[in-house]
Amino acid sequence: MQLIDGKSISAQIKQEIADEVKEIVAAGGKRPHLAAVLVGHDGGSESYVAHKVKACEQCGFKSSLIRFENDITEEQLLAEIDKLNNDDDIDGFIVQLPLPKHIREQKVIEAIDYHKDVDGFHPINVGRLSIGLPCFVSATPSGIIELLRRYNIDTKGKHCVVLGRSNIVGKPIAALMMQKSNPGNATVTVCHSGTPNIKEICRTADIIIAAMGCPNFVTADMVKEGAVVLDVGTTRLPDPNSPKGWKLTGDVCFDEVAPRCSYITPVPGGVGPMTIVSLMRNTLMAGKKCVFDS
Image 1 (cartoon, one colour):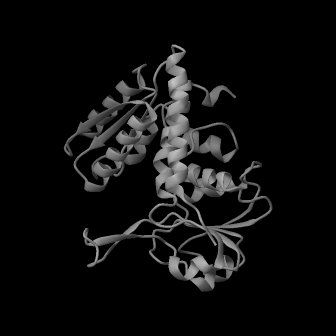
Image 2 (cartoon, rainbow, N blue to C red; image 1 turned 45 degrees about the vertical axis):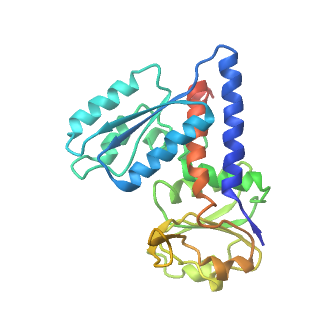
C-alpha cells in the first residue's frame, strides 16, 4: 500500500506556479490577480478563504478579498459581480459558497463571466467539460486527476466507481475519468443514495472515488485487493481527545481499507490540499488568457 501525499504534491505545484509567475513578471507580463467574494461570517467559509489568500501569496499572485454582510441583497451582489466581470485587472474570481438563503446560488454562479470562473461552476464551463473542450475544471476533480497523473496510476480501461453525484465533485470527476485522455479512458460507474447494490459494484472497482459526505461509508468488504481509493470526504466528527473537540473524517474507513489498497489518500492530507492548488492553477491559466483559445 502506498499513501498518496496530497500535501507534498500541492507544495510542488505551488512552487511550479510561483516559478512561472516570476518568469511572466520578469518578461514584463501581468501578475495574476484572484478576487474572492465573501458574504457573511460563516466559520468554514472564513477559513477556506483565508487558505486561498495565503495560497495566492505563496504562488506570487495578487489577491483581493471583497466582504459583504449577510444582509446584502441578491440584486446588490449581482451588481458587484458585474463590476468584477468588467474589471480588467482581475483575471479570475470566486464567490465563496454557501450564500445566505435569500440569495439564489445558481443565479450568482451564472452571473459570473465564464472566462473568469476559476471555480469551474458556470454552466458553460460545465458543458465544455462534458464534451471534452478546454475549460476551467472545478478544483477538487482537477486535483484528483493531478494526483493520479503525478503518481503514474494507470486508469486506461480500468473500472472507476464514483460514489456521489454532486455538481462540484461526483459529476465532473466522472466526466473527466471518461475522457479520451491520460488520466482517463476509464469505464465509469456513478453510485449514489438511490443505488441499491453499492457494495457489490464497489467490489468490482479498480478505482474508487468516494465523494458522498458519509463518514466511514467505504469499508473493507467493499474494496477488492489492489484497488486505488481516493477519499474526498471531509466531515467533522466529535473527538474528545482532540484539542479542537473534533476530527476530520473521510468517507473511507481508512484503517481497515488501507491494507487492501495499492494506493489510498488519507484524510486530512490527501485530496484536500489539491483543491486549493487546483484553484491556483486555474487562476494562472486565467491570467495567461489561454484556456478558451482552442
